[in-house]
Image (cartoon, rainbow, N blue to C red):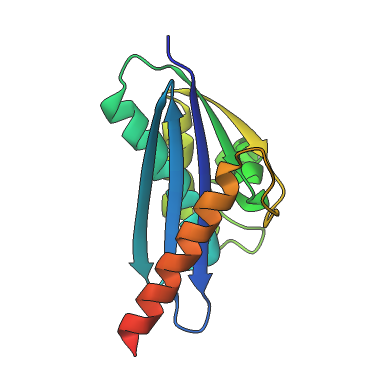
Length: 155
C-alpha cells in the first residue's frame, strides 16, 4: 500500500474577496501539485477547499489508498475534525441558531473523512526555508502567488 502525504494551504485577499488554494500530494515517489482560484470567498474556505480537493483527487486517482496524512497550518481545518460530534449534535448550527460558517464545505469534508482514514498534522505557518524540504512553504507561496495574479486581473 502506498504512503500518501498531503500539504495544503489557502490564501485570500480580504478586500477583493478573491482567494486561492494549493496542495502538494506525495504518493511514493510522485509529487502532484493541485491549485485553484475562487471569487467571493474567505481565507478559511480556501484552507478547507485545499484539503477537500486533495482528498478527492487521491480517492479518484489512487482508489486502493485507505490512509492519508494531511499537513496544514490551518487551525480552523485541524479543529473541524475534533468538533465533528458537536456539529452533529447541534445540526451544524451555532448557539444563536444560525448555520455554522462554511457549512457546505464542513459537511463535505466530514463526509469525505468517513470514507478514508486521515491523520491531520498541524504545522507552523510561514516558516523560513531550510535545508530540509518543506512543502508547506511551497503551497503557501503558490496560493499567495495565485491570489496576487487574480487581483491583478481584476484591475
